[in-house]
Image 1 (cartoon, one colour):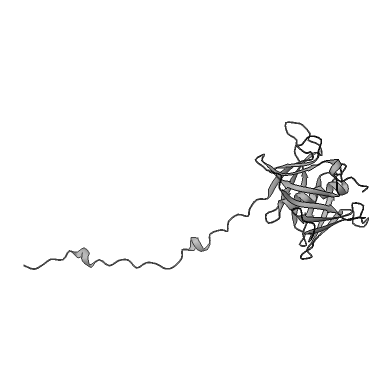
Image 2 (cartoon, rainbow, N blue to C red):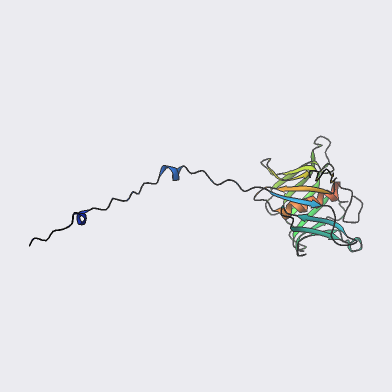
Length: 213
């Protein structure tokens, strides 16, 4: 008897394609990360303290500054929600509040940033100049802190952080004590908040350091 082999035994597998599909090659890049929007309240949560309280978009406490007048040493500490020091802002001696330095944690050496108040009638929009102490990168603060409308620009003229008025809630004007801090992706939100504290010292009405500005 002749053995019969089913025709399917001779079926060949289809060759696999190694060519990428056109759709994969032309897939759009992922959308850029959105900026971080923080709500800044120019008030400490502690009794008999001056400072700042900062919340994220979900209402979580992010940063805080709590300053007792009697403990003023010419420095301000920016803390996280748990009270851990993130950055220390120190006034340069004999600068009358026009020159400040920002340090990591509570360090007293090797500042990260040097910030100088800018007074130039030919450039009225320029408020302060910020220099990275490790690389010389220069930022400019322009606008009006008094109106809560100013921005920090990098060397390419890109606004990496902005202070904006907060919209009215339920028809209630929040005034100047509550405002927004918008931070672009890639820029440290803690550093941006440290600049807010410095602008209050240079141009605001409630200095956290007892001195003549």
